[in-house]
Length: 147
Ligand SMILES: [Zn+2]
Image 1 (tube, rainbow, N blue to C red):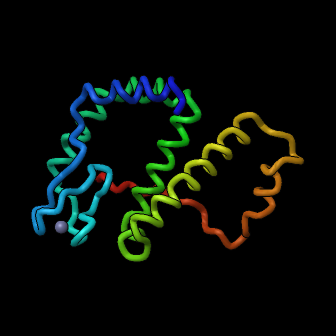
Image 2: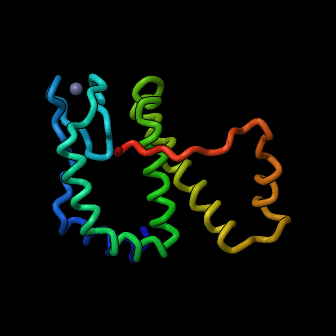
């Protein structure tokens, strides 16, 4: 792990972000990053979102600083992907499969960030991937799951 990210990430512990929540319906313990109960699909309680929002306010300047680190940026984007895949994961993928999929996604995002930011020459995989984007892909939409 990049020592820069590690050191900064350790500082996030100072803010007492709860790392798990207990499902009100089935009492299953779930990771804070999971917005639904892994056992019954019940939604994470709202008051936990408030706690997270308070933490976010205190953490924002640190997070902005960390964003200059590509490794951290890739991990953060990978966490968005993981969170937005949550329902799909619950329906179709085992925890084992997710474990295998997560680093693939994380490393692909990291590679894309490096290629894009360094404007790697057009002979690289950057151009290859540009050419692969299908016309039928809809424009991306902004998804706010913490409204
Ligand atoms: Zn549950």
